[in-house]
Each structure stands twice: as C-alpha cells, then as structure tokens.
Amino acid sequence: MGRYSGWRVAAMALTAITPLAAADVCSTLEAQGVEIERPFALDYTHEMKNYWSVACGDLHPTCIAYPSSTLEMSAIVKELHNTDDLFAVKSGGHMPNNGFASIQGGLLISTRRLDQVIYNPNDQTVSVGPGLDWEEAQKALDDVNSGRTIVGGRLGGVGVGGYMLGGGLSFLSSQYGWAANNVAEFEVVLANGSVVNANAKKYTNLFATLKGGGNNFGIVTSYTLQTHPTSKVWGGNYVFTADKTSEILQAVRDFTEYYPDDKAAIIVTAEHALVLNTWIMFVFYDGSEPPQGVFDNFTALNPIETTKTWDTYYDLLKHNDFFILQGQRYTIATETTPLPSSEVGADVMQSYYDHWFNITNTVLGVPNVIGSIALQPMPRAITSKAKASGGDLLDFPADQDYIIIELDFSYTFSASDKKIDSANKNLYRGLENMIAEYIEQGVLPDVYRPLFMNDAYYSQDYWGRISPASRELALKARKAYDPDKFFQTRTSGGFRLG
Image (cartoon, rainbow, N blue to C red; front, side):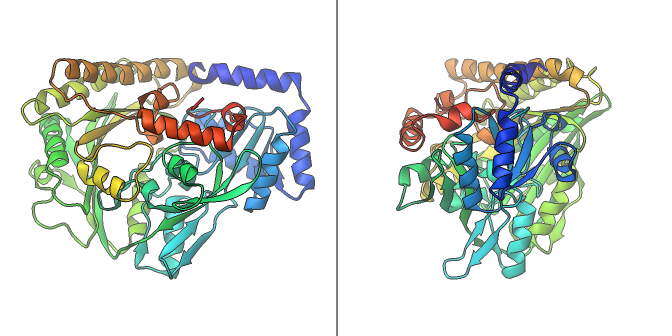
C-alpha cells in the first residue's frame, strides 16, 4: 500500500490509542441532529462505493456525517476541537489521492446533502452546493434558466467541491478563465467554526486564496458562481490510431499557439495497455457547430469521429461520463511545460510521449492496467481571461502558452499499488527533469511553471512550485483564519501549506 502507508498507519495507531474518540464524536453529532451513518448501513456502503478510485473506498471511516446546512457543518467543526480525530471532507470523490477525500478511521464529512442550486436573476449568479456533481448543477440551472451555464467540469460526474478549490479547468476556460475565476463568493466554515462570506469586498485575502488553495483554509459550503449565456453546443470525440502520433503531437502544439477560437476546447489523450494503443480526443465548441478551420489540424488526420450538436451543455457533460472508469483503482499526476516553439516542437513533444510510453511499458504486466497521458492546452487565451477575471493563486502569466500534462493509471488490485506508485513517480519526476534540462539548454523558455492541483499526485510539491507571492498570500490567510493549523494537522490528506 506504498503511497499512503505512512498516514494510514498513523491514523490506525491513533484509533488504537483512543478507540472511543471517533465513536464519541459520531454519537455527539448525532445527538445534535446531524445525520450520521455507520459501517454496514446502506448510505455508508453507498458512500464507500462512490469514489472514482476503488482504493479510496477501501478506507473506512468510523462514521460518516452528512451535514444538511452550513450551521450543521459549523457544529461539526466545533465538535472536532473536542477530539484528536482526523477527518476528511468529501464532495464528488473524484480526487484519487488516498486520504484527500477519504479516511481510515476518524470522521468522513460528506457534503452530499449540501446540494442547493439557487439562481439569482438580478445578477445572473447561481449558488451551488459542494455536494453536487457538475452535471447535477447544470441540470438544476437548466430547470430554472436554460439559457445560462456555469464554468465547471468537463465530465459531468466530477464533483463541485474539490474541483473548485484546485482551480478547475473547463471547456469554457478559454472564454472565462479557470472555474475559480468565476466565483463571486465563497461561504466558508473557518477553523474555529465561524461562518464567513468571502468575496471581492469582504475577507478578500481568503477569497483570493481559496482560488487554488485546496483544503487548507476552511470548508466551503456554498459557491456563488457567475453564469454565462449558452444554447446548443457541439462536441464529442475524435479517435486516432497510434501511427498518427507524431502528427497529433504537432497538431496539439500548433493548436495551443495559434488558438483558433476562444469558443473551442480540446483534451488530447493517448491510452496504452496490453491490447490498447490509441488516441482519444475530446473536442468542444460553444455553439451549434464550429466554423470552418477551427479543428482542421485534427480532421486532416482522418479520425473516427463521434461528434454532434447537443441540445444542451448538460447533455454533452452527461455523454462524457462514458469515459469514467468504474470499479478500478486509479492514480493521477501532472506536469506543466511551456509550449515548445515550432522549431523544436516536434522533438520535444515526441520526447514527452516517448517517456510516458516507455514508463507505461514497465507496468503492462499489472492486471487490467491502462496508462494514459492527456495534453491540455493552457494558452494565453485562458491565462489572460483568468487575470482579467480577478486572478487566482496559480497566477499563470498572460504572455506565455503552456500545456498541462495529466498522467493516469487505472488497474485492478491493491497488490499492484506499490508498483504503480513507483511508475507514477518515475513518470512525473522524469518529465520534470526533462523540462529542466530543456530549459538549461535553451530549448524551452525559463518561465514560471506551477502545478495544476486538480491533477497532482499526493507526493508532488504543489506549494513549492507556486509563485513566492502566491505562497505568501496563502500563508497570511492561513495565519489569519487558521492560526493553530487545524486544517493542516487534522485533515487526513491534502497539499499542506505549512
């Protein structure tokens, strides 16, 4: 169980030393009217199965609390100060890092009952609870105003909560920036149990820090989001055979630099297994069909095409859920590369692909393993919109194009955890070293390269890669709103700020 053995052993040891503590907090909260589910109850069992990675569901909390209001969430936080138990907060269960939204022993707080979607026609914002998936939020918004949409996940089954606190990359980002840039207000339960509303006028440093700061500062119980006009959208998938790899890599590089239309978006993913070696590309256009020329670099490669015009954005999100693997263990990691120039792009992009392919080859004996690499353009079309919308902790410069690389493994058995953990580390560390060497050689520009929290592996140094100014801002917020490091020391996982 290599990648989470340390904290898991610590958590189990704590449970062994104080066996009644977690049970006590469960009973105390239940007496206060908070819904509590214990092992073997139907809702408890369902919650354990509602993770993208089976490995997270293998961790069993002493009980699960289901607050149905901000006041109940506040009561839970206050009561946790009377125990030494670890806790975790779960939204949609998308993040596969063990302990981030899952826990062995201790208290799991599920936000599933915080499922409000309240549209305000006066300012065209919508208040969304962290317990929803994006398709649920979009569907509820459609029910009250079918002409508006929210900047959210690209697969409908992604949960709202963790996605928002990590920044959130969307099909709509080239028009409106990160999902976090579209937050008008956070309702937050702080470490002392008090509730504040952080926005551009009040609690401004907390407001800024929550846009990319993860679970270090409080528990968000509501996101007030700016909505945007929408009607029909176009999208689906292109599928390519592996013999088109060099052309695909070139097309991704060119698309990122010469971003043809802000309403367009892509994710280009290679998948490799014992009997699988292919490319699956997600394509999107915010309109009934893309104008001629937007995706020409890809259609020229004669893909198998499954695109169409969707009546609503919700329909497309729901369709994309097909690509969520069920019943598998799952890991994720990331790296950020500045876009290579056209002169060196072919060699650099191929070297990234080859590194991923070769490392994946080393684990093809793992039962049912699938390795994937996703190339996600981060052009200045996105970063400039992010800055224009108030900025965020990641603070990508607006004059540089990037590609965010996502690295995934899915597989079946816990006996393979250690081998996959090693491969994952070899993958992201190898890419980081390659990029550093390219920069030293002058092949790539020496620019700021933060990591995308939503895609980061538990052992990656998120805070070490963020800008000094952003880290200082976050530290000031942590000291102001959590001086005793409650969220740093009591949550069972996360990217620790210190």
